Image 1 (tube, helix red, strand yellow):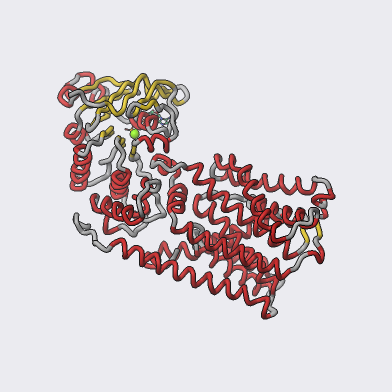
Image 2 (cartoon, rainbow over the protein chains, first blue to last red):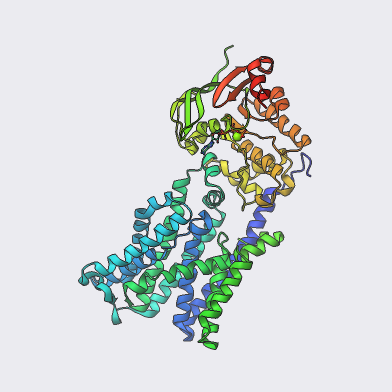
Length: 327
Length: 240
Ligand SMILES: Nc1ncnc2c1ncn2[C@@H]1O[C@H](COP(=O)(O)OP(=O)(O)OP(=O)(O)O)[C@@H](O)[C@H]1O
Ligand SMILES: [Mg+2]
């Protein structure tokens, strides 16, 4: 046990250098990721694969804001993504707006939807998860029921040759970059600390003067914003959408699995989890097309069973000295 | 000199279904004083504290904190009025380290990160948790979690401090340390409402004692008065 008066005078500068160490590792990862994604179109690489990799990294990072930092698990997370695809497609196809404006508008629509759904944050645990899931279904139905001239009904919309894939690709790259930078900011900010306190014990955080519902709303909005942007870039990249695929619950499921496998609540975790699993998925798919889903399911089950906090989370739990490297 | 009242309860009632857990309670806490609150298990002590700190909604009554009428305000608003509390079962932030745990009540403060960090380490040092500062709170023992809550309250630096069973599960040496810290804070002008089953500590610390039984104040006064009050002896030892 420490005796009184053991505080080292340079404690804070040590803390700062520890933060620097964490950030440098994290920024190395970001840089490698961004660079490799940046170069693919120039190298004639597998554009679609890299696009979906970036999309999943963005979604996993986005869901981490609400699930990892506040402990809320939105099973209907796809609603924000779906709205993003639709707003982009409608603006481009029906109103003739440029994609460069349509995608940011999609992000805003995600924020609006998040504000509309904000009352659901009063529920907790499984109740929130279920209501969130049903709201995503409502959104899907709404899109297929709206007038066909706007949303294309159950067939969806086709942007055809109007969109440029490469531009959509780079839009996704920028969105991913902004998401990752926001994550690192959050990881070190006071807001991030408040959110983690809320995740661990909302009542105690409240009693310590944290305005729980307001702070949680910020995380919710950030989460929704990036999902909607990712949806927008997806519409731009593929040029086609329909209500079934745009609001597919599998999108939420994959997002959750990728983020969890890496480690919700850490900044690096969702990125590591996504990159690894998307890659494994691709390899399994190429080598054993028949066993694809079986093998992937097995890997995920084992991961969740033996590393409930994800790869990064478990490493931090069992090897405390690693904490100083991991953000 | 007439002491300044920092907390005043009048006719507070709180029921759960048919059970009246707090019945018509009046209470005063003076500035720079310690008010003890004792009573058998289930007497309503924690419920009373939860009503003050806004975690429970009281059914009726009034609550004045430093002249502000604030019954049934939300917990963070009560906290911002200058009321801090600890919990009977420690409520720490499990998956963040001790420094971040202690920093939580000061996140809204207008201080720079360096000052915040240094204050946090000082508070941890005062309860002898400094060496564990980089550990996650879930890695602490039950007693250490109590100490962490005390450090967090010191960081909070509120005018009024509600302590619910701060000594439970803490070894005698650290208990004495806690008592020293509480006395220090009182000297600095803080006011306490202290719940404990450890009567020796309560009698040693309190300026005034309230005895709660089945949600009602059955006795109040200074230490000597309360410990000799037949009603109190009856409630504590009576039909045991
Ligand atoms: N959330 C609740 N819902 C229903 N009843 C409750 C609740 N909280 C407390 N009670 C009841 O209110 C009464 C007072 O409980 P309280 O926790 O205030 O007692 P206490 O004096 O703090 O006891 P202890 O010394 O055991 O901590 C008890 O009868 C208890 O069953
Ligand atoms: Mg109690």
